[in-house]
Image (cartoon, rainbow, N blue to C red; front, top):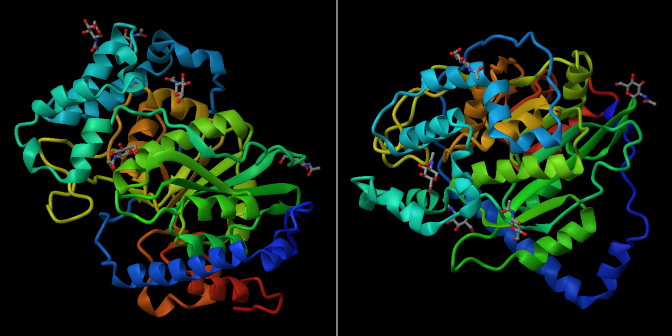
Length: 428
Ligand SMILES: *[C@@H]1O[C@H](CO)[C@@H](O)[C@H](O)[C@H]1NC(C)=O
Ligand SMILES: *[C@@H]1O[C@H](CO)[C@@H](O)[C@H](O)[C@H]1NC(C)=O
Ligand SMILES: *[C@@H]1O[C@H](CO)[C@@H](O)[C@H](O)[C@H]1NC(C)=O
Ligand SMILES: *[C@@H]1O[C@H](CO)[C@@H](O)[C@H](O)[C@H]1NC(C)=O
Ligand SMILES: *[C@@H]1O[C@H](CO)[C@@H](O)[C@H](O)[C@H]1NC(C)=O
């Protein structure tokens, strides 16, 4: 059904013709090509890392989604009453240990009990408070730059939106059925184009509207090339970029998630399902739509490849390293961040509860913590393969046609696989 999707026309924006005439755009194109080559080189040299423990099957929530009104969000007393039981569950799973995050979260629990909102410190984003907190970590000096920044700026949650798509969800007659929210980096131009040209194309299929947004911060590093103008250009051409004014680093992905939830409440609040994923996954969108349209939309959904009984990674040179002075305890069951799906109406509850759960540097773990605080356990779906599949199957379209999501594929592999899967003569 997907090949017949009508691409959303962007009439009135004849960008192709303008580009041919204007030499400025030619230099933009040259720069883009250089960046694509650079990206390919970076990907080629990047080391793959062991990330997750073995997946496991968890329960399926049976209760219905309780709709929350936007006015509810301001009252900690409301939160405490509404999520009392599930918050107790979260509390029981976190040891009362002498570690930075544990202590910070216990402060949040106490504040909730007292009916205050942990002094809404994340709105103040005060660096002197953060420095004081950091001073309590005995080996703070040995923390990596990323950790230091995470702690010093970990309470800053308010960043302005530099590029918005305020009408993204406005023109779907029957509401947006599936919003693909894809975490990307400014420099990942080729990955985004491959997504647009394949599984991320926007359209309507059997009354189900699919929309796509790419979630970006600003290019990282004091010495990084300034990509802003290229990203603005890209946004004008395709209308699918959301970019916030924060540095797009690995430990700011939780912040990115949180800003995306705020955006959803402002601009796409009636969306039925949200798929959060990386820009280097392959998604079998037609199969995802079949699966989602078979579900009872009133039940809360949080599904993907479920990591259960996981705990912090203590190997110091890993990207996922968590120092013992930072966090002690197990992780809740969570869906692997390569790609997972949740019900759109949960966005408000998630955003609300996140105001009472301290940011955690690993974004999918943080999402799991917030869902646990809401009393929703992730449901394992065997179609999500965030650690990829057997080597021999990685180019096999038949294997991919039976899955929902695979991590990870290059832009070239994505285009090749997609072309085969949507071919009307494709048979397995
Ligand atoms: C919250 O739950 C705990 C334990 O289940 C109970 O003791 C307490 O009274 C509840 N508080 C509110 C405000 O509902
Ligand atoms: C909130 O701030 C007040 C006054 O600054 C302080 O007494 C109180 O301990 C703080 N509460 C929390 C939970 O940090
Ligand atoms: C967030 O920042 C903007 C300006 O950057 C400000 O107008 C707004 O009040 C801030 N919101 C909160 C909740 O602090
Ligand atoms: C709109 O969505 C509902 C619920 O999915 C569906 O039953 C209905 O057929 C759709 N209407 C149109 C015009 O596609
Ligand atoms: C997150 O972004 C903010 C704002 O750009 C920056 O100050 C901070 O260092 C970043 N945090 C990390 C962990 O990179």
